[in-house]
Image (tube, rainbow, N blue to C red; front, side):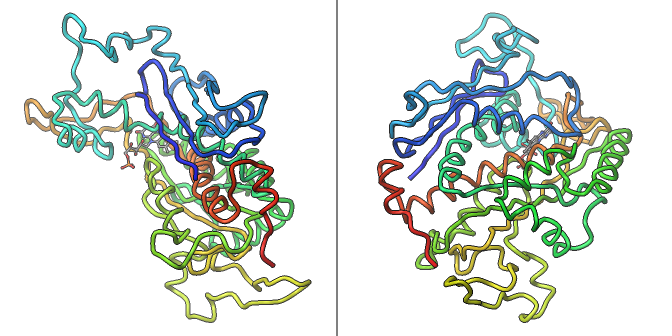
Length: 393
Ligand SMILES: Cc1cc2nc3c(=O)[nH]c(=O)nc-3n(C[C@H](O)[C@H](O)[C@H](O)COP(=O)(O)O)c2cc1C
């Protein structure tokens, strides 16, 4: 089973990741990880410095001559701002006590972990909370999860995501969305993801892309922010992954945890999801077929899972991301020290991070799926797994 840990603060020297449980013999290159990191950095709605530096995660253990050894894979990513001594970060984030005062942050931002983090750890400064709760952490999470994604890819399981809605702009109904996406799934979901990558907002529809960009411009001008709804599709999953036999083995529960553990995610649905609550049963359940010696379904409203187990149909996960909490137009808050009401301070921030967050979620579900795959077909090496891998018909 694959486990991973991340460590590091946004402006500390490095982000560190360890992935344990990858089988031996999996081709794994730094390029595969860099690709996902680059996709995570692209998208309309980024704030501040547009000429951001490209993230790279260096593989420092567990891979020899381009293949995993079955040992833990350690990854490290340098934080350039720290390295360049920008804004005094080596002093602000020093691991040893420093001489003289360091500016404390005492004004919590609503929608962030600022206040609850201070209440929880009894800090007198919000800085440590900001440093760890920020979505900078998703850079290393993506790097770690990209390794599990490579395992899935090896066995023909592909992941692709796209944006359905940003603020007021989006598709009319989910059924329209899926049929529009279907031709993109024939060769695997990566084609869908690549088509979405071509849009500044990762939307498959050109008209909607324009409207979404306009929506972001409008909210930026107002000093506000946006979230939205996205869809992740996984193709090539064999039937029978996951289990109905015990609650903690149900795959939708495991996937929901992966999605909801991502910063700013406030909802997740599988298949029709919430829409199923507005329909009667015959408009929801997928009839079973037997064609060309295989079981199938006439429709895929269940989104590829029944009873917590994959059906062999594409897995459809939808999630919602809340609007970014840091906004140019301030919100009211209270200074922790003086207890006086005051405005939030603005720091460089995205207006809408949804197009980038789609890539994060594409990757964070990979270990959950890889583990369901390994549970059924697992072994110590890729060759052992290949001998066992036989999809159900
Ligand atoms: C890819 C990504 C980028 C984000 N960028 C920002 C940002 O620039 N500014 C911001 O205030 N929040 C940003 N967020 C959201 C915050 O990290 C998140 O809302 C905050 O940590 C509070 O956690 P919660 O929303 O899960 O409760 C981003 C989230 C993701 C997934």
